Image (cartoon, rainbow, N blue to C red; front, top):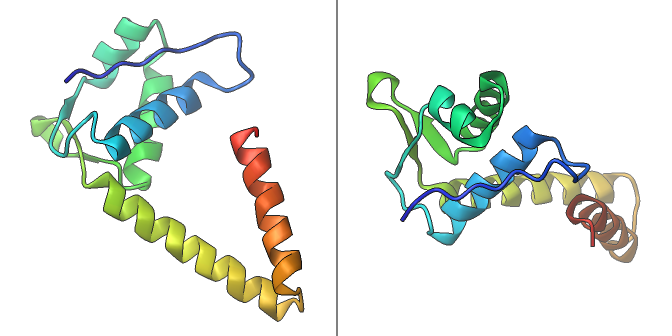
Length: 124
């Protein structure tokens, strides 16, 4: 198991977001198991040809999402991403549902708006 990241400069997606999304997906799929030690910020930046600040920004976002944990001198490790990501998504969905209901939207209207947002986010 190795970390495989491909940064495509021709997409409209920022490099830090490409990195964040790929690490997150590999952690959720199990390709990067819980406890897998990620490269240092500088090491990964050199490997990918990115600025260290770009990698650091992606790592901060991944840590905020609960996908990775930074343990000081012990490095940066993949956390139990699936559970944390599922809980955060479920909480966000619950907040949206409650807000839509308070705004007086029907279930059909709320679902249509959520589907539009998902299409916009996933590009499909």
